Length: 163
Length: 271
Image (cartoon, rainbow over all chains, first blue to last red; front, side, top):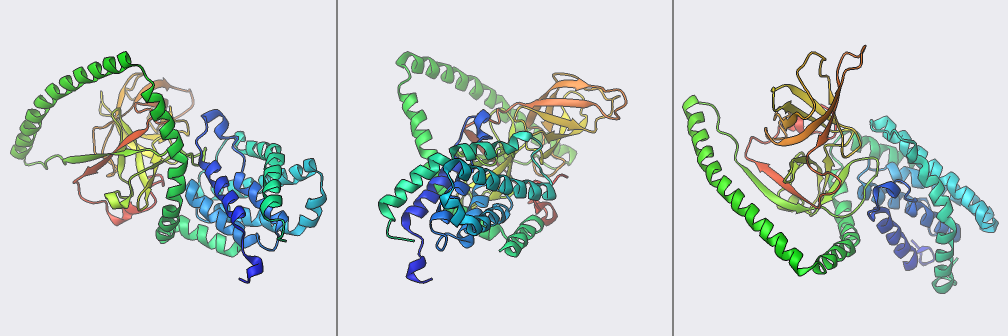
């Protein structure tokens, strides 16, 4: 890996924070509405540094998420890698979208990962038989502006020199 | 990448080889889980330290009287155990397995909200093995799904993929208690309508699956329904242990023969 492609420390820290937020215990009623933090963070960094944070990073993050949530190894890895692939295709356009339009794209991406997940869970025997399963699509999109502003500020403060 | 992911999933689903990879990654994940758990634990400890002096004295007195009572019962229990062993020896049946327990703390981390799983702070270093029963003071909680080095993931009896062989304490009727995804509800499957079973009956582990030792309390039956046209009764039971509220669990070691390799497969498979 040449020095121009190293993943900056703030990116790793934000991913770590996303993992922590993913397993923080929430009261039962809102636990199902937990947004897909890891995906949100990955989408932002994929948009900002498409040559550093790519499919491989998404895949590894997904693998870690699988272990953290004790799901089938590779399930989230596949979903996040697929989402990241789409981000890498459309990032020039996403950068100039207004925030709400980005949120729509994010909702679509979360929906895609949830769909891939439920598909795999169905194939291996334990699909969550509940429509609340799709709630994170909404909450992730609603929280996208917050994540966007936090990460953009972080990028402007520490990573302005990078592409 | 897609192929790698599919291959990983297939391997993980069908075989047991990826345990080491999972263990390594889980060991990396453990500090993160501890970091999430720590502030919550500290918070509850601070709340504890603010509880009032009289309250503590009262609680202490209650606990002391409880302890006395339990000690007294334990005295008789030892004598009964000895007598039981003697009688069993006379009858030439195998002695009951002796058991060892150890307290494990539950880490305050959430896993997939649609599966009923928990993380405990004991791992393979403490001798935890896959399929090990997990109980608390009220009844059976679940079993170990994957032991890692310093932590383990356990499957609760209320997970939809968990089935527990039980008997009804009053009649000795055997049944299968299947999780429902709701921590307050278990379903009893395949009980024909002519069986004698009613509300309030206590369910014990039967020991038939080979994982759980017999005669541990599991649940109490809350409703028995007979829907005309259905071949079996619709029976709901409520677990005695508060699955969604306990902070501690007891790991159980029995000196029963180790489970056969066939039984070592994925513990979440239905039997």
